[in-house]
Image 1 (cartoon, one colour):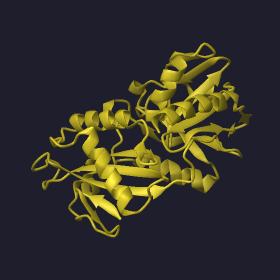
Image 2 (cartoon, rainbow, N blue to C red):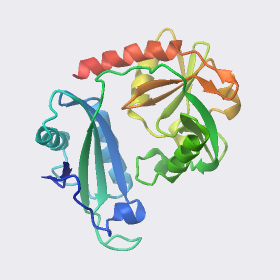
Image 3 (cartoon, rainbow, N blue to C red):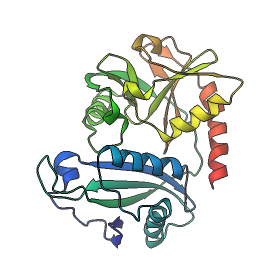
Image 4 (cartoon, helix red, strand yellow):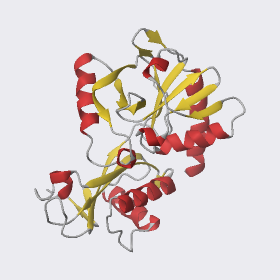
Length: 281
């Protein structure tokens, strides 16, 4: 089942072929982890969505409060009888209007979908996790690249490249050949006691878990935080590399080209991240 503009309907319900999200990628989405009915880091998700809608000049309905959207997610979970489980909720907002490139209005519609997750807390999964640099296409620097729009062609092509070549993930670079992020999350690099991640002006997503780790690292006495550009040459000199997103939490990279990496700092930060998750549930 899905929540389509407030109506709980069958999951095979079809959007119009004239939907602007389909025709032009004129849509945004948030992926939220819900544990026992509680969307974790929900305030961060909500304000990121509102800021993104303003940037794209979408008309934000008066009833689009944090409480309303949380209730809309809860209604879907209740309808599917999934209470007491961990859920991956995708909240997609699209401009619901006719027109070509120029929309006839800035009104919006939304769709909410859900999938059950195996675990409530985050785990740094064991096993090989090899990555490679994706150089066929670049992420453009600028504000639009930091938004979660449905225009993800670079990520799609990078994912196909990774699958065809046996990689778990790929690292994306921008038009100035600076490291931006991975296909499905933000990238962190560890060298000694310095933990470094690309700044958002380089084109990376304003990730929810990225923000949580920045808050953790800013208060840490063990590690020094740097938000600064990363050159591809730095990757093989790092002690650790890891990926973050709201569904996986933290995933250590084990190999990049001929270099293998430790996972000590990532595992340490994961404990601190899970402590924040527990506070939210």
